[in-house]
Amino acid sequence: MAAEGGGGKEMNEIKTQFTTREGVYKLLAHSEYSRPNRVPFNSQGSNPVKVSFVNVNDQSGNGDRICFNVGRELYFYIYKGVRKAADLSKPIDKRIYKGTQPTCHDFNHLTATAESVSLLVGFSAGQVQLIDPIKKETSKLFNEERLIDKSRVTCVKWVPGSESLFLVSHASGSMYLYNVEHTCGTTAPHYQLLKQGENYSVHTCKSKSTRNPLLKWTVGEGALNEFAFSPDGKFLACVSQDGFLRVFNFDAVELHGTMKSYFGGLLCVCWSPDGKYIVAGGEDDLVTVWSFLDCRVIARGHGHKSWVSVVAFDHYTTSVEESDPMEFSGSDEDFQDQMIHFGRDRANSTQSRLSKRNSTDSRPVSVTYRFGSVGQDTQLCLWDLTEDILFPHLPLSRTRTHTNVMNATGPPAGATVVANTPSNTTNGNNSGASTPGLNSLSTTLPRSNSLPHSAGGGGGGGGGTTTATANSTNKAGTGGLTSGIMDSAIATGVSKFATLSLHDRKERPHEKDHKRNHSMGHISSKSSDKLNLLTKSKADPAKTLGTLLCPRMEDVPLLEPLICKKIAHERLTVLIFLEDCLVTACQEGFICTWARPGKVCKPLGLGNGDNRCEAYCHPKTKPALPVEQ
Image (cartoon, rainbow, N blue to C red):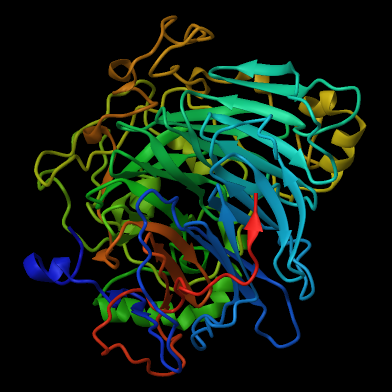
């Protein structure tokens, strides 16, 4: 394993710093004032601690705000990040709920101002509340009588680019599209089928007047654990307890592609900044990297010892290089010096350089994606996704690796040798590019129906690369944020939703979808199961293993983490990458701020013997604003 610090006793210690190629990340402890009664929260039976951020763009230059839930309580603070610790005795807003618990929340970044923010909060009993923690107002409560869905809210997010639409997923396996301007009605909604596909269906609300929910999605089997919109807002990735990742064209309500976990349910999902790759994690203790364009698994990462609870890409540490002028040779220090030379200028052009990979330029652009994961094993892992994994058909001379190759002998014909640990990256900045077009390099993949070559034994899991990419259908979307078109269109007639377009873009030939874009069916079958389009039979785990939906371990490269550190006493539930720090949280109610290399403003006292996450914590004070459901 690539974790630092050796094994044994050191591995069980709570870490307060870790080192990557770009430098040292440090946990920021309290320095100027203490938190009141920093007693760890008893998390038995409680929902996971979640954290949301928003910037209100106030004139003071300190516009960041943080919201987090602990048990039945919800807190809203000024977030001072790496500058100094918060005064936790003075929250902007704090609430306690009776009979239900907050499970998730999300700010509307479009409408946020210094005087008002719109915060959606989902609850364990199924309700969704819209509040303004600055004005200390509660404006609306959706699904108040639980007539729409009685199960726990698992994820809530504003639709990108919209001031009024939001999407809510439940443990029932359903998702609902709401408009804050509409009511939910006094009776249970009646639905009519809008569209049905492989293991999913979408219904509209059958009503004389427009009411919530506008749409009901039923996806897979079991709980729908999390969903994430693509950077351009056009596509929606969902992960479910049945172990499937399903990616939908959101406005067309069509299935783009699927992937199956190695085993167990999938719990978390995220998109790369350019929308080309999706990472999912779950109960198989793995992180799985899936190509949006090729609709296939391209790598798995093994570092966690228990379920993976959160995955997230680091938009600020995506490295983009021109391969020809950057011939990497010499020591690691020389390499680091070259990277520092580019600095922030390179970071600012990351978005445009990512798009160059879609052109036919004779000089390929080398991209390294950084992503992270946290799990119930209390460990933080950082990973690099590099060219040798993304494009295994390219010669290794074009990429830089810092670990031994899996097989010592030459590879067989058609196989590509990959390193067990991806190459290191440098600091960069990616503002989140839109889903790109077709990558010209993808057309040069190996021959049809060729079997993948294992890269030899040893070291737990193959380093071989998948070459079975026959007849790959490369799907691509164009950029652009979600506009207000959806709002007005749904208001005039939700039945036309399937034909709406959130963007001005070229139409794709959906009628020519390749077989790989249809899932293999449910693990457990129920009355409405359809025959599988590939095998004409109901699928089971044994039939999906070894297919494009779920390659065997030896059929795809196995990543090892750059770092793997135990950073908490209880399971980790949050990982968020910010420009000057990363934020983690554990189930005890402690939210940590880790300063990026060179971002610590002044020395912070870490020698107080308290190794818990210390920047923001759960204050044990009586809530100032009780709220009852």
